[in-house]
Amino acid sequence: MSKIIREQALLIDDQKRTWEEAIRICGKLMVSLGSVEEGYIDAMVDVVNDMGPYIVIAPHIAFAHAAAGLHVIKNDLVLTVFKEPVIFNSNNDPVHLLFGICALAPESHLELLKKLAKVIEPEKVYQELINCNSTAEIYRIINGV
Amino acid sequence: MSDLRIQAICGFGVGSSTLLRIKIEGVLKELGVKATVFTGDVSSASGTECDAIFTSKELADNLRSKVKVPVVVINSFVNTAEIKEKTEEFLKTR
Image (cartoon, rainbow over all chains, first blue to last red):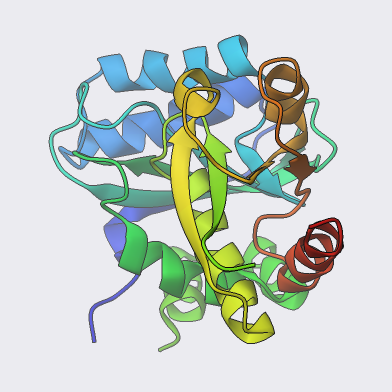
């Protein structure tokens, strides 16, 4: 079975960050993996500046992304676990799990998101993830291995 | 009640609205309601025919002034219980 997320796409950050710094950390990871160009990072920040913190889609969980196609090299999903709370000024603050998504076309990630939604729905999973001290542990929880 | 059309809205239809669409489809299937659920973005939402829009709180405020259909606010896109409850509430109004 294909994995939801690969270990290179995982990061743990233990510093106090603003929402913009947090998105840029996720974005840099996506650039380093060759999934997006630098411009995608600014685009993800602009989304929140333009449309508000709607990317915080559940308590403590945000999905940073920008438009499909533009500055995108390949479909990818990354996750940064922030040990310190990140404030987005959302009802679902504070954020600790920041996923970064990029897609060549809308809905590219349908099957992947179906699997991910099942994994992250139980609240205890979020607790387990923020207690992780290695990306290997996060990898095991998300991929169920 | 057939041919219900529900639009899940996010900024671009890349991540969050796809996730929401998956969850709404799951709930409707469980409730035995036939419907088409599709994703859309804020800019195109008002021009797309549908019976209801499901979205986040932030985008709902923006959308309500532009559309005539009910706008249902979902706080957690991964919480099946919340999505089920709000879908049932919306279905009662039909």
